[in-house]
Image (cartoon, rainbow, N blue to C red; front, top):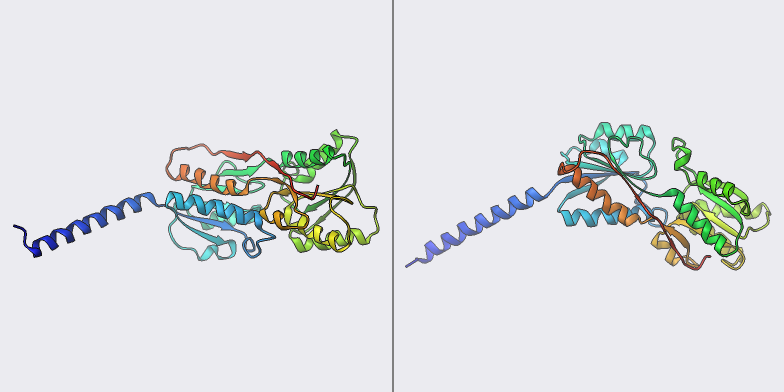
Length: 301
């Protein structure tokens, strides 16, 4: 017969063994990673909807994989002192900024998410097809019978090669489609406020309204839509507007914004898949994953 004291002792030991077993399994399943991003990426959801979507994808996959993770702005990276198993670099940094990041982090398990990877031999690269994004946007306008187009672009990093810039593929498309007329190309800093002021400045110049406006990303386009609305210029009746990103915020503009969806959430998830392969040593060769974009048809075209 087991005494109450013996029974309690058995349960205590069993619980301790079970706790130890679970702890070991959890520890074995975890990796500690950091996500390095620009200082301003998560200050404004409208201007940075792309990066919020990437972040949501990263977080979702990290929870599935039982990863520990930290989002670290570049300006605070030098303060991060914990050991890590891998790192994501998210955003279009300059080469000198990437060099700084690589000096500050102690891992060879690296994945880059963004427009241009300066070191494709050292880190995996998650991106989308820029040429297809421009082509799909322009073909959408052509299919609507719109051939006079104003291009508004956000300024790229000066170090990004032309073949990784949207303007390059816009100009290529015009060369191959002589029936398309570019009425102007103008550029501004990124963000909805800059799009708003840039659109107003162009309208103040008194130039004839084009049939359509192609804008390089959704935040700039949302600002431009606000300027057009305030001028009582009807979209899409007076002018069509199309953009690139496919941000969810485009569902709440007036009218809703037709955009090319680059699948930012999926890019975030895929970055963790690639990083997991590196951490688990299941792949040695670096790889580039380029998402195929798709038109998000809404009301502005």
